[in-house]
Structures are given as structure tokens and as C-alpha cells.
Image (cartoon, rainbow, N blue to C red; front, side):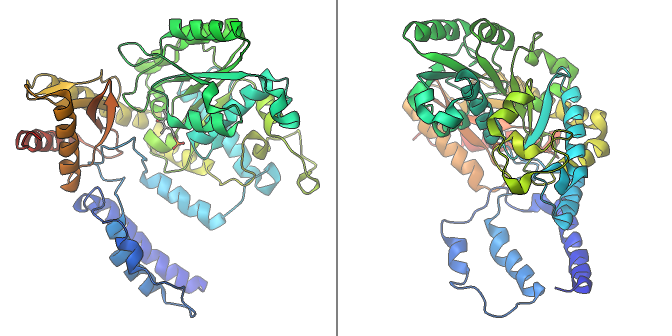
Length: 473
Ligand SMILES: *Cc1c(COP(=O)(O)O)cnc(C)c1O
């Protein structure tokens, strides 16, 4: 493709992008595509000869678009959001045009230094003490893996990396039963073993019970285990429960255990002074992750990982082959030493564009609205006699179910599952579910970039009428 043709096609594409943003609500929010449907429409072999861009775009519209679930649809209430925003998309255009591979400072000094500055901005925005240094990771899963590997190295005198499993002894990692699955994955990858991940019981609000944590640690010590890491969550995936960080931090300090905080979704709410309490007063934790690619309007991927002691992180990951030796080593941040992959995208540019375009106040306004939408919805649910809330709505997630009375727990579970499918098949809204104390819960997240009160109103009407027209199964 010659530059002239690129220019022409790119202009058209921008038109397409802008009208997509304007018209995203006209698509079914959840793709209505059947398994294998898209695959069958694609040719079995690649083309031998070049094809014009027009035919690529035609197939994109005809074949690909029907198989897309529209995460930027304001009635996307499923999972947690993967929010984008126009400034973030514009930054991505520049990032892919430069196509820099930002593994070390030398391979693009601006990327490294902007990243350093953006992490300072973010740290200040969410109220972390300035001792924390940050690095952008692809996902929270990777950041949590980095945390667990660092904890593993610290508790084995940095010997696991060199000696392998024999250095490990009997390491133990602790998290609550509500913790994200990425923790178990990381524990497995780290060679600590799934059976050494101890699930601590939760309290009524689904947050970790610190008394149970303490007794598990004490018991393990007595049995010769080495407690190595605790993962606390601010904003669990099921219900956005908030683990008591000060109590947990205190226990970790006493026992010399690395504490990692997973705030993948809820970390963004820390930009609101009225939600700073979630962080606790003592900030006894060692590392902290949150995803601007969830709730801070910075499109996937961009995960902000902060550590109290960058030297330990670097010591865990650093490796220096001849071809990566530079004159600037030690003077600058070479972020390849701060995590798993060598290659890195220029993600800091997205943050810079987003934060400057909205301003902290603009971001706060949006997040505040999202939280208000959730609490308003929870209030409306609580006054309907045939619906019930299944968890407190602290942030932007509401967990509830339809319960018209006189139906067994099993029957209610089947009924609410059927309701969930019926709503999603309508193409008008998209909700996912969780199970809380054995109860199937509809889980509605009111945090899409462009969600407005009328979207939540319409969804609630649809849910009520959908539920009330269900036959008991
Ligand atoms: C979404 C989520 C994750 C995983 O995030 P990725 O960036 O997709 O790896 C981890 N923990 C919590 C609490 C989450 O909500």
C-alpha cells in the first residue's frame, strides 16, 4: 500500500470509526452469532494475490461485524467493562503508526520517560504514597504474576530463580474465596502449586476475614510451611467486595509476608476522595495493580502496577544478554526488567491523552456517575417485592435476582439463568452472572464509558418485564 492510498483509506476509516461511535447503540450489544458461523464464512486458504482494501472492508462489515460483541455499547453491563474513549483511540492510532517496540529506554526514550511520569500521575491520582514506583503491564494477571514471583524470590533469598523448586520449601500464598482466578493461575505458573494457595473465608459482605487469615498463617507456620504472599482485593470480581487492607497489612507486617493488592476494576474509584478509605490508612502493602483499561477509559491493554520496592521487582526479572547492554543502563528505567515480556507497546501515550483530555475532574465526574447509577438501581431493586439484592452495591456492580416467592433454590437458580439468557438474546442489554452462597445472581455493572441514566432505566424495565413474563421452570 502506497502512502497516497493509505491516506485515502485512512480518511475513510476515520469516517467509519466516528459513525461507529455515534451508532454503536444500533448494534445488538452481545453478538448473536452461533458457534462456527464466522469460521465457516472465511476461506480455507490465504489469497495468492493481493486484494484491494475495499474488499477487505466489505468482508469486515459482512463477516466480522456480526460476530462482534460491542463492549463500547452503553448497555454493556456484563463482566467488568473494557472501556475506550476517543482520546484513547487517537493515541492508539499514533502508537501503531510509530510502532515502536519500547523494551528499553534506548529503543524509545520518550516512551520510557512518559511511562515513568504517567505512573507518577496515576499514583498521585489514586492516593498512593510517593514511595511507590509504577510500570505499565499488559494485564492485571501479568502484574499479579509479577507480584507472586517477587514474593517467591524474596522469601527464598532470591534463590528460586537459580535453584528451582528445591529452594522453595513449602511456600504458601493466601487469598479469599472471592479472589480472581488470575491468582490461582499465577501460583501455578510460579511453581508454588495450586494446593499451596490457601483460600481464606469471607465475612457477610464477601470481604476477607482477617482473623481467619491470621489463624491460617499461624497454623501453617506451626506445620513448617513458609507463608510467602497474601493477595488482598479491592473490588472483587463477583461483588466488588473490599478486603480490609489495614488489618491484613498489619498481619503481613507482623509475619514478614509480601502483600499484593488486586484492585483491577475498583482502583479507578480511588480517584474519588470519598472512596480513598478503600486503601486504608497505613498502606502496608508491597504492590498494587489496577486497570485503566477497565474503568479509566483507556482502551485495552493498559494495567498499572505499583511496587514499594522496585529493586526487588527488578532483581526478580532482570536478565542481561549482550545485545541488550547499553551505555544508559542504571541511569534510566529499562522497563523490560520490570515484568515478564521483553517487548513492550507504547501504552503510556494512551494514558497521557486520556488524562489530559478529561482532566482528573472529568474522570471523577464519570466515575461518580457510574457509582450513582449502581446505587440508584440497587435502591429500585430493593423496593420491589419480587426482586432481591444478593450483595451490597458498594461501587458500580449490583448483584440481584428475581424471586417471586414459593420457588425452591434450585428453581430460582434455573429461573434466573433463563432470565439472563433471555435478556442477552434480546440484543438490547448484556449482563453476566455470578454465584453467591449457592445463589445464581444477575450481575449488572453500570460503568461503561457512555452509560447514562436512561440506559439503566431502560435495562431495569426490560429486566422487570422479562422476569415477570417467565414461567417458573
Ligand atoms: C478483571 C480482573 C482481573 C484480571 O484482569 P486482566 O487485566 O484481564 O488480567 C484480575 N483481578 C480482578 C479483581 C479483576 O476484576
